[in-house]
Length: 374
Image 1 (cartoon, helix red, strand yellow):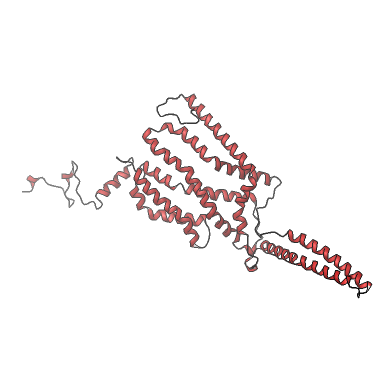
Image 2 (image 1 turned 180 degrees about the vertical axis):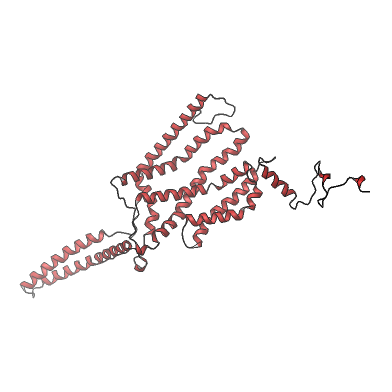
C-alpha cells in the first residue's frame, strides 16, 4: 500500500497517481493529529501542569527568608502561609483553654456566676478552635503562581491551543515519516542510503532539543525574566503570552539541535568542505555563544555555558559524521576548486605544470627556450 510504504525508485506513476498518494498521506497525517489531539485534550490538566512548573518555581520563595520576597504578591503568599501556621497552632491552644475552663466550671467552690461565664467561654473557645482548624486547612501549600486569563473564552481557547501544540509534537514522527515516504522515490538507491538516516535524525534531534530546553533553558529563562526588578511590579503573567513564549523557546531549541543535519547537508551538497567548516570553528563558537546568551538570558556565565555546551558538542560530532559521509570527486562549485588548489599549493610558489607553464619564469619574467640561453 503506497500510503504505508514508500514508492520504489523504479516505479512509474502518473500525475493522478501521485496526487492520489499525496491525498492519502495527508489524510493519514490528519487522522494521526486528531488522535494525538484527543489524547492530549483528555490529559490537558497534566499537560498544563507540566508547562506551568517553570513559572510556579520562578515565583516560589522560601518564606523563612522573607527579605528575598520582593514581589508584593510573593509577600502576600508568605503572609498567607504565616497566618495559616498561626491558625494551625492556635486551634489546639484554644481547645486546651476550653477544657481548662470546663474543669474550672466543674469545681464546686466556684460561684454560679463564674461557672456560667466559664462554660460560655469554653463553648466559644471550642467553636473558635474548630474554625481555626478549618481556616488552617485552606492555607496555600506554596507561594508559586499560575498564569492568569483575562478574556471570557481565553481558558477554553488556551487549553485547545496547548493541546494542539502537544499533539503536533506527539504526532511529529509519523507526519515526518509520511513526508519522507512521499519524497523518497525521487532518490536513487545510493542517495537513499544517505537520505534516510539523515531525515530520521530530524525528529529525534528535535525532540532532544525540546527536552533539553524544557529541563534547562526554559526554567532559567522564566526565573530570570520574572524575577528581574520584581520589587517594582505586581507580576501577573497572561496565559496565552506565557504559552507562546514557551512554545517559541522550545521550538527554537529543537531547531538549534538540527545542527548535525545542516552540517551533513552542506557537506553532501558540496557547499563547504569539512576542512573549511573546521577552519570556521571560531566563528561557530561565537555564534553558539550569542545564541546561548539569547536563549538563556541570565547574568551568570555558568548558565550560558550549560546551554552552549550541547551546541558545541553537536557541531563537533557533525564534523566527524560529515567526514565519514563526505562525497568524493570534483566539487560542484568553482570556489571549492580554488580552495583545493590552494590546499595543494598554499604559498603559490610552485610553477604550473600545464601546457602554458613554459610561458612564465619563476621571477615573473618570460621564460626562454633552451636554445635561447646562449
